Image (cartoon, rainbow, N blue to C red; front, side, top):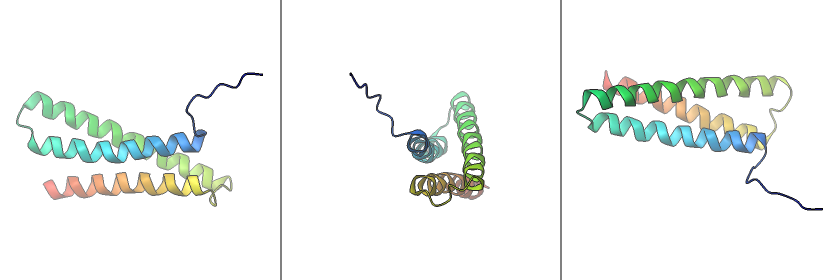
Length: 99
């Protein structure tokens, strides 16, 4: 019997990876937006920030549903929740620091 590996860590592990990517990408795009003087590029960065932030909010909903199903003790779920909360909170703080 042949076993194929697809580089997956399971559903929660993959979502944790996505959450970490979003957290880092949001921070990177904020820095790029602060340094950018091109109006078209600024619009693209703003659109990207919004899309990533909306995905973070969707993932927060997933975390809440999984907690409701009794998975609140899962280490991966706790990690995912922490990463998503960091992304959301830091994004909010960076937006407020601009105003």
